Image (tube, protein in one colour):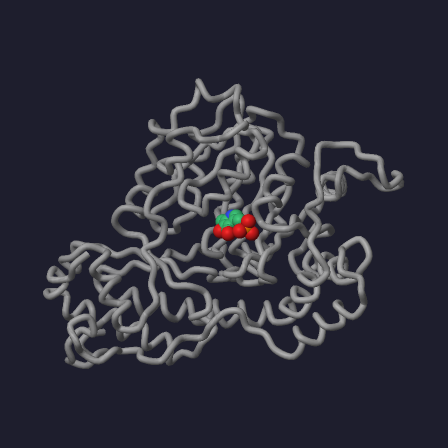
Length: 419
Ligand SMILES: Cc1ncc(COP(=O)(O)O)c(C=O)c1O
């Protein structure tokens, strides 16, 4: 395909030409009368807490079943869910947990907040997901767990990660904060490791504003999670009897009511995103210098929380920032992704861990960590589009393609773009 077949010859919107996409894309969240009715019902019931109402309990059952799990424990957010999973798995202070550095902060800080050491292993450039070879190289005698992120909604290479875990007797906690409804082969995200963790924060593909959930097929781990999220109580124990270090992390009934209605929409929305995402990836791949995230053969359903791509500055003759600025001016809401790897965040460089990890600090030096693929994604190439765009039509995808093609065609002007 010639890019000139896709565009008008008009000037870049950045320099006063007409926008390719003047209309907004679909927004998020999507809600309507079912959410209103169910929220009102929960309100009028007077049962606003998980201990007394039916909503969260019903949601836990339905979410677990949809994700191929026997157990699910809803909590206040998707950071706490990671920490509870680590604690339930019996990890101890100073144990090492392997995490990717190209992810939201919470994947690594949940480890620190559990008094454990995050060890960063690089991601693959083409999938943006944890590289199993880097994981293998990061394993030490102190490693106790691996926490792969199904980044953007494409499952990590769980066959190789689980094989490493079996070999070294490690716990695997899937950070599935982006991966509601995603499938690795026939298995839902969150059902493959020992434990899974999801977020329901506002931007997520399933949301109630704030919330999270832990999934597992292991009854013992489920019981430990239930106890930790409920002040250390145990089945059959009396009310003021507390057995383990814990707190109240229970999700409320209003969130449960919203999640129960949102869950009815999830699979249809996920299929729409996957269809649009695959279509867009195929078309963008034809534009020089644009590399959509490689889809692995094991990805039976990608939840496209983010549509990831890389920009090759040399093909555009201009840096990523100029390309993205020109796309934004054409009406395409685009992000350059994470600007620095997690291990370069001041929090890690300065070990600003508050009271956590007192015994490990002398041994740690995050300034020495080097994950070349992650650094390249952050500094030069990585970019993404958000999930709500993919709830739209094929015509919406075509507008995105036309904007990329127009920017590529006018690439010789991009060096005039002020950063
Ligand atoms: C990969 C990942 N893990 C964990 C979290 C934490 O979830 P929450 O914001 O619900 O605490 C997020 C997002 O916000 C995330 O993107």
